[in-house]
Image (cartoon, rainbow over all chains, first blue to last red; front, top):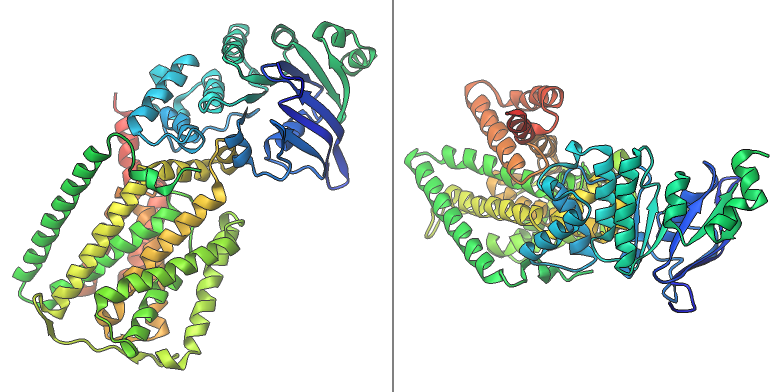
Length: 241
Length: 330
């Protein structure tokens, strides 16, 4: 691992009108690291991810990726640089088949142009996430867990350096959570640094090498998962003591 | 971002080129058969009716690249069409170029206008984009009405010879030109739909933020679609002055052309290249039959009724409806 983070934010501030959603967040993700990001609903996790990936622009602060300042970069350029994400609510391209959904980043980010190569690589990705049998189907026919797998497949297709998985396990059964966790672990083993935003503590603790906690738009803890879970402010935020 | 040349690159490029040649040969043979069959009617009316239907096939296919694939409903169709019409008028009054040289010039002007309009309007979405394109068409209309050189509001005559060698009658010549334009528009629309650009446009149509996060450069690809769609709409407008021989703003910015161009893909289905073709052939032919048997005043009424029926019964158009039925089949 290199000493400097692959993805970092310095003093990130995001406001919606008079409401301050992020209060100067400093954050760093090391290469190949697995970080869990937790916090109660409305604590600013998704807003933070949106600012990192370019879906939202922060009012103050900066975001750097691989040593480059990407604060002003549009989302598609960040994706080309190797920053991928999945969405809290699956957002498949419903007008395309499952395979074509995977083909989009392969064409636009990986720059593949040969149709046969694209299909072969898309099928490889779909096999990794367990969706190969559904390749020719419309995303409309997929179940919730399959849609989440498609989200992950699309995010990982162009082999990003960082993947941000935003609540990829929400609403899934225990066995389905384990399936998604296995996919994420596999991706991490292939060299991708991952930020996992999740409410399912069992999954977060099992997955994360480091845990970051947001409350009301501020980072209140950052460290080894079991230590962070014992942090008084974290306990207060979660249990209301 | 990848270069546009990647559309036709890769190890299978040779095979693709052969397939493209075969497709062109089939289109040429089909086109020749259509022109021959029309000649059997023994009257120029068959050519004029065919011209109108083919013009709608071309317009619907060109409009669908932005309106159907990307989901950006362009109400400014008449504006782009009129740019082609008035490019032809200006060339007729100044350079006197043959029509086949005027068409590319019209495409360039309308394409540049599409690019400019795209820069100004593509950050708007949904109905706001549509209203902006309508406003663009109205601004152009006002400019033309006040431009005396092209006839202003009273219009201008564009005369053509009765015959042109080796095509015979001028009506036959116009049909051949429109047939080539229609085939060209359909083939371009088909190529776009099946390319990575088509996948990008479909992704944008579904979810612009998710598409950007999947690496789709939304503004660039929309500008490409606006420019290409605009250029084709302009090219289709270029032969129009020679077809009607008297051009005024009311005919160039015609409501019939604008409404039909949008309604035909909606009725046929906007998701594929085939939808606009089916919609245009169906509606265009129906309107020609109604014009001859009852009255041309019924044309827009037919479109209106069919549009209401299809939006209610088959919102994804004929192609979407048939596809839905096939998927339901056990």
